[in-house]
Length: 249
Ligand code: PEP
Image 1 (cartoon, rainbow, N blue to C red):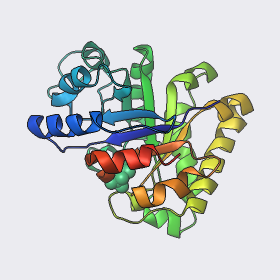
Image 2 (image 1 turned 90 degrees about the vertical axis):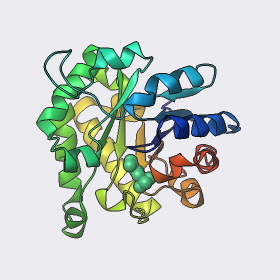
Image 3 (image 1 turned 120 degrees about the horizontal axis):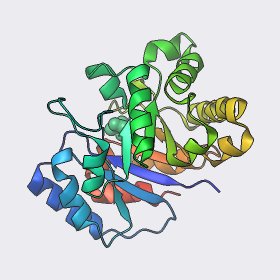
Image 4 (image 1 turned 45 degrees about the vertical axis):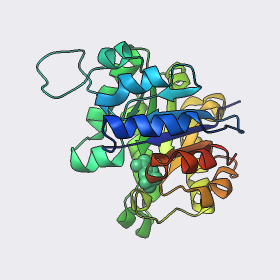
């Protein structure tokens, strides 16, 4: 049985005191679903969040990492540094990293390898731009993003990979893919995995949807058979909204 997961990506929001406030209010929330819950604060607040959530069932994950183990990469953070502050899971390939920091499929393949070498779990993000969707090229784009960054891996690696389909046109825009659009794409992603690795692997990988998920639309999106949860941006910054989504299963 694959897992339901809800992960909050806090992006470049929340200084230390704002992080403390949000962590305090997260700890007051009640979980009524069986979803795995994760939050991704900024690098500077990872250790603090890890300590604060140690006794909870909320996992603290990172928003990014570098592929090298260490060395002359000013401003970067390695997998072993993340692990040293309690982080076991990293988000890779977010569309903002691809668009603003020129992260290519080739670079992401190296980051994926580095994370897996360090026994980390990966939430691997991908998704088409609006022009791809309008040109009916969205499936080709998504298939090539997955193939280029992940299809050099063996089947066993997928035990440590969660996929996150995030159409770029729906991120932070208030525009959501319809539940049917999400389901169609998730089914396509699962088929793409099945064609390469077989049905057992395809059925075991959790595929999250991301893009303007809110308390008001989460239930319908999560009710789709191939949608196993969500990667949440804006709505993850308010504990009540985030838990309304966590509890939407
Ligand atoms: C995201 O950044 O991954 C995201 C889905 O953002 P939002 O929920 O704000 O659209």
